[in-house]
Image 1 (cartoon, one colour):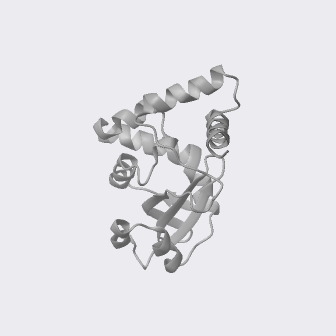
Image 2 (cartoon, rainbow, N blue to C red):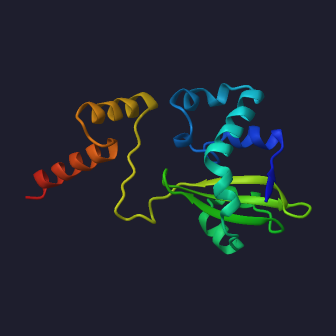
Image 3 (cartoon, rainbow, N blue to C red):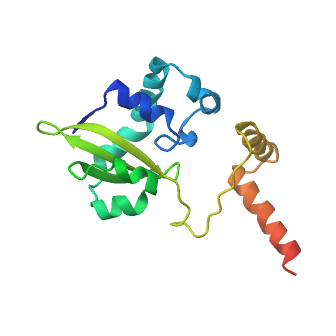
Length: 170
Protein backbone atom coordinates (compact mmCIF):
# COMPACT_ATOMS: atom_id res chain seq x y z
CA UNK A 1 0.00 0.00 0.00
CA UNK A 2 1.31 3.41 -0.96
CA UNK A 3 -0.18 6.54 0.58
CA UNK A 4 0.49 9.94 -0.99
CA UNK A 5 -0.23 13.31 0.57
CA UNK A 6 0.08 16.58 -1.29
CA UNK A 7 1.93 19.45 0.36
CA UNK A 8 -1.20 21.59 0.77
CA UNK A 9 -2.83 18.80 2.80
CA UNK A 10 0.36 18.26 4.82
CA UNK A 11 0.41 21.96 5.75
CA UNK A 12 -3.27 21.94 6.73
CA UNK A 13 -2.94 18.81 8.86
CA UNK A 14 0.35 19.84 10.50
CA UNK A 15 -1.16 23.16 11.59
CA UNK A 16 -4.10 21.52 13.33
CA UNK A 17 -4.01 19.98 16.78
CA UNK A 18 -7.25 18.22 15.75
CA UNK A 19 -5.25 16.26 13.19
CA UNK A 20 -1.83 16.07 14.81
CA UNK A 21 -2.11 16.42 18.58
CA UNK A 22 0.55 18.23 20.59
CA UNK A 23 1.55 14.92 22.14
CA UNK A 24 3.24 13.99 18.84
CA UNK A 25 5.28 17.21 18.72
CA UNK A 26 8.40 18.39 20.47
CA UNK A 27 7.68 21.00 23.17
CA UNK A 28 9.05 23.91 21.15
CA UNK A 29 7.01 22.83 18.12
CA UNK A 30 3.72 23.03 20.03
CA UNK A 31 4.38 26.63 20.88
CA UNK A 32 5.36 27.77 17.40
CA UNK A 33 3.46 25.54 15.00
CA UNK A 34 1.03 28.36 14.08
CA UNK A 35 4.01 30.54 13.05
CA UNK A 36 5.82 27.87 11.02
CA UNK A 37 6.32 28.36 7.30
CA UNK A 38 4.69 25.98 4.85
CA UNK A 39 8.06 24.27 4.27
CA UNK A 40 8.53 23.75 8.01
CA UNK A 41 5.00 22.34 8.32
CA UNK A 42 5.59 19.92 5.46
CA UNK A 43 8.79 18.70 7.15
CA UNK A 44 6.95 18.41 10.47
CA UNK A 45 4.18 16.35 8.87
CA UNK A 46 6.66 14.12 7.04
CA UNK A 47 8.58 13.42 10.24
CA UNK A 48 5.47 12.54 12.23
CA UNK A 49 4.06 10.51 9.35
CA UNK A 50 7.22 8.40 9.07
CA UNK A 51 7.84 7.98 12.80
CA UNK A 52 4.33 7.61 14.18
CA UNK A 53 1.51 7.34 11.67
CA UNK A 54 2.46 5.58 8.43
CA UNK A 55 2.75 2.00 9.65
CA UNK A 56 -0.43 2.26 11.71
CA UNK A 57 -2.45 3.67 8.81
CA UNK A 58 -1.18 1.00 6.44
CA UNK A 59 -2.20 -1.82 8.79
CA UNK A 60 -5.44 -0.28 10.08
CA UNK A 61 -8.70 -1.96 9.17
CA UNK A 62 -11.30 -0.03 7.21
CA UNK A 63 -14.27 1.14 9.26
CA UNK A 64 -17.82 2.06 8.28
CA UNK A 65 -19.24 5.56 8.04
CA UNK A 66 -21.50 5.14 11.09
CA UNK A 67 -18.44 4.45 13.23
CA UNK A 68 -16.57 7.44 11.72
CA UNK A 69 -19.48 9.81 12.29
CA UNK A 70 -19.97 8.57 15.85
CA UNK A 71 -16.36 9.44 16.68
CA UNK A 72 -16.17 12.88 15.06
CA UNK A 73 -17.33 16.15 16.54
CA UNK A 74 -20.11 17.96 14.72
CA UNK A 75 -17.76 20.55 13.20
CA UNK A 76 -15.74 17.77 11.51
CA UNK A 77 -18.74 15.93 10.04
CA UNK A 78 -18.87 17.95 6.82
CA UNK A 79 -15.30 16.86 5.93
CA UNK A 80 -16.35 13.21 5.75
CA UNK A 81 -16.47 12.03 2.14
CA UNK A 82 -18.74 8.99 1.83
CA UNK A 83 -16.95 7.85 -1.32
CA UNK A 84 -13.56 7.53 0.39
CA UNK A 85 -12.16 4.78 2.61
CA UNK A 86 -11.92 5.36 6.35
CA UNK A 87 -9.61 3.59 8.75
CA UNK A 88 -9.41 3.80 12.52
CA UNK A 89 -6.28 3.08 14.52
CA UNK A 90 -4.66 3.63 17.88
CA UNK A 91 -1.05 4.51 18.57
CA UNK A 92 -0.72 2.17 21.54
CA UNK A 93 2.55 3.51 22.90
CA UNK A 94 1.11 7.04 22.99
CA UNK A 95 -2.50 6.07 23.74
CA UNK A 96 -3.88 8.17 20.88
CA UNK A 97 -6.78 7.29 18.60
CA UNK A 98 -7.16 8.46 14.99
CA UNK A 99 -9.33 8.11 11.91
CA UNK A 100 -7.97 8.69 8.41
CA UNK A 101 -9.80 9.29 5.19
CA UNK A 102 -8.15 7.88 2.08
CA UNK A 103 -9.03 8.42 -1.56
CA UNK A 104 -8.32 5.30 -3.60
CA UNK A 105 -6.16 5.74 -6.67
CA UNK A 106 -4.72 3.15 -9.02
CA UNK A 107 -3.98 -0.36 -7.74
CA UNK A 108 -2.96 -0.08 -4.09
CA UNK A 109 -2.24 3.66 -4.14
CA UNK A 110 -4.17 6.03 -1.89
CA UNK A 111 -4.22 9.75 -1.18
CA UNK A 112 -4.56 10.92 2.41
CA UNK A 113 -7.29 13.58 2.46
CA UNK A 114 -8.17 13.81 6.17
CA UNK A 115 -6.66 12.86 9.51
CA UNK A 116 -8.68 13.21 12.67
CA UNK A 117 -7.28 12.87 16.18
CA UNK A 118 -10.05 11.50 18.41
CA UNK A 119 -9.55 12.95 21.89
CA UNK A 120 -11.26 10.70 24.38
CA UNK A 121 -10.96 9.12 27.75
CA UNK A 122 -14.37 7.46 27.45
CA UNK A 123 -12.82 4.14 26.44
CA UNK A 124 -10.63 4.08 29.51
CA UNK A 125 -12.86 4.68 32.52
CA UNK A 126 -9.86 4.22 34.80
CA UNK A 127 -8.14 7.28 33.24
CA UNK A 128 -8.42 10.96 34.05
CA UNK A 129 -7.27 13.75 31.74
CA UNK A 130 -5.43 16.66 33.33
CA UNK A 131 -4.65 19.80 31.34
CA UNK A 132 -1.90 22.18 32.37
CA UNK A 133 -2.08 25.90 31.57
CA UNK A 134 0.91 25.63 29.22
CA UNK A 135 3.71 23.37 28.02
CA UNK A 136 6.18 24.74 30.58
CA UNK A 137 3.87 23.81 33.48
CA UNK A 138 3.54 20.26 32.11
CA UNK A 139 7.30 20.05 31.59
CA UNK A 140 7.90 21.17 35.19
CA UNK A 141 5.58 18.44 36.47
CA UNK A 142 7.39 15.83 34.38
CA UNK A 143 10.77 17.05 35.68
CA UNK A 144 9.49 16.91 39.26
CA UNK A 145 8.40 13.29 38.74
CA UNK A 146 11.87 12.40 37.43
CA UNK A 147 13.59 14.23 40.30
CA UNK A 148 11.43 12.34 42.80
CA UNK A 149 12.33 9.06 41.04
CA UNK A 150 8.87 8.24 39.70
CA UNK A 151 8.70 6.07 36.58
CA UNK A 152 6.81 8.86 34.79
CA UNK A 153 4.53 11.82 35.50
CA UNK A 154 1.43 9.61 35.37
CA UNK A 155 2.73 7.63 38.34
CA UNK A 156 3.28 10.83 40.35
CA UNK A 157 -0.14 12.16 39.34
CA UNK A 158 -1.83 8.91 40.36
CA UNK A 159 -0.13 8.95 43.77
CA UNK A 160 -1.09 12.59 44.38
CA UNK A 161 -4.73 11.92 43.50
CA UNK A 162 -4.92 8.74 45.61
CA UNK A 163 -3.37 10.55 48.60
CA UNK A 164 -5.91 13.34 48.14
CA UNK A 165 -8.76 10.82 48.01
CA UNK A 166 -7.57 9.08 51.19
CA UNK A 167 -7.36 12.42 52.99
CA UNK A 168 -10.84 13.54 51.98
CA UNK A 169 -12.74 10.21 52.00
CA UNK A 170 -12.45 9.45 55.70
